[in-house]
Length: 179
Length: 219
Image 1: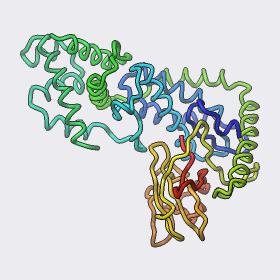
Image 2 (image 1 turned 90 degrees about the vertical axis):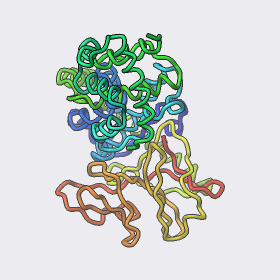
Image 3 (image 1 turned 30 degrees about the horizontal axis):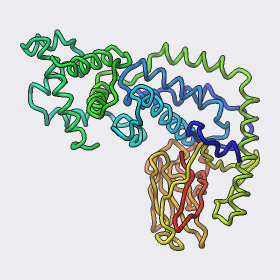
Image 4 (image 1 turned 60 degrees about the horizontal axis):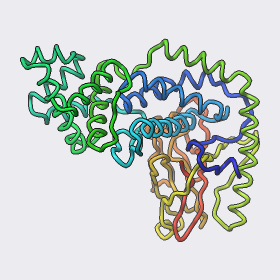
């Protein structure tokens, strides 16, 4: 009983019974790309996505039972990823993310993760032209602030201001546009 | 240019250079803007694909870390089995409704036992008359609560094949998987499947009744 309900342990699922050793290399190969992508979509950078993916597999693999099915293992890994992500934002932002912005948490994660581009296109379509342009140049074309400013015919300082306002507006629209 | 504008600009630069964003503030406005920047970043070309070098080096790290880990996993398993027996016994003694639980190496079904979990109410007993099935979603667990012959059980709503979400087919009294045309009975058993892979039954979830509500143990 004590191991089943010990408070304070990361909220993860145990898949119980079965005595064969786990073919963890197969589990790892089968799931690493999808867990990485899921985390990347929530942190937006390679550094944090790699860090969290490592944490998920280090934490989860010793606890997995060999007899678990692919679906169960995936569910278990996603549950672990959600726990690790909550801890990440709690450390980085000093607060429970779910209380400030559910977009940063994984509460609404769907499997498999959906392609983010269609939703981004819907948000972009609703933005004023200069806001849309700055975000397209920065995020979709990967331009630097200098290149973005040059292509928009504005100063770099101005490009930063437009970028800031565009993201503010995109955040508002994101809540309206829905999944 | 305001301080906030400089801060946002730095995050965007960090994200575009695959770095962890620096200088985060604990306020709602910043979190919203950061979330929008992360969402746009995830739509960048090629975003979300792991670096092969990372995949390789993590595999090597796991190989080092898991050396000699099989005995540890088995110890964990035994403890968990004992734990689950204890939990089942305790809940049975308290007169709570618990799903059938099969333990032992030859068992096909694997029930999901959350660690560090809490009981979450997922339905009113009054809304679950005999023969009724309802879906629930606690955020971490999706599943179904079923009243079969006056006995209420909870089972996972995720297909054991590739993890697709099951759909209740109330008329046929079964759970259909939309991905590969498979179906489970309301006891979690496999009714049919059209794929060569083995398809284990759906795991039961730990459940109980408290103050007129059906509660499920979730993370």
